[in-house]
Image (cartoon, rainbow, N blue to C red):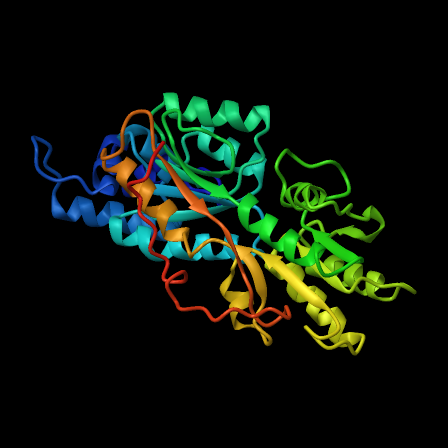
Length: 355
């Protein structure tokens, strides 16, 4: 008898007193054809499987069928509003099209899972543009795996790209803060180590330099994606003898942590401290005051729509690149507060645009 914790098809066959082929036929749910299995035999097999607690190996079955009916959604941090929104959107839409959704965290998890044939398609919700990542994406494309990659720099090569363009919106934020403040604190989502090209921190630094302002690195803190670290970093900067009078953060969650630290210190926002985040998340919109932020119109559904089109064979061989421009949105955490007409927040972005 096989393992008590993981019974095999052979265990089911032995308990039911039938052949492996009979168990395979019954458990696969096949019908018709030349094979005939009596109802009592079917019942005996199903009862044996139930008693043993047998669960079919869906990955192996998927390899035999050439499909898994599974889609992987790769995110970086469940605390990130964008990551959470992407996962929730995929989980809401894809099951209606016959796909189960698997959420994967981090680089190694998704590469190993996809290269082992774990899913029919993948939405890569962030791109680090490492050699290993790019090699994996190209390898999967050659295998015909449907892929959508959210990236600032990648070009389609047998996969589709949801092309984020944060530079313009971040430049607006830099111009606004740089023209009003001499001490600008920054909380960025990375680590203390140098990040990949085109990070939001570097885009902000470059935009400041273009208007003649140098970012003071002593006022920069890394959160590593942790809200606790972001809060502590903001609190530390606000406790300096000459604290920042404004903050730019590379994610909305970090911006809300700054607001929390400011409240802890008894500061009024935006009168005594202006705060700008990045992402245009629902979390930021719902905060009080509403968060001023750089970000796109809601676009999570675009990634899902692109993947479904590729799975249905409706996408071109080379792939499509759908631009998602980001812009500055002035709300309650800045002195400037623009009235939003709603035109930029309806989430409607054409998927027909391509390079």
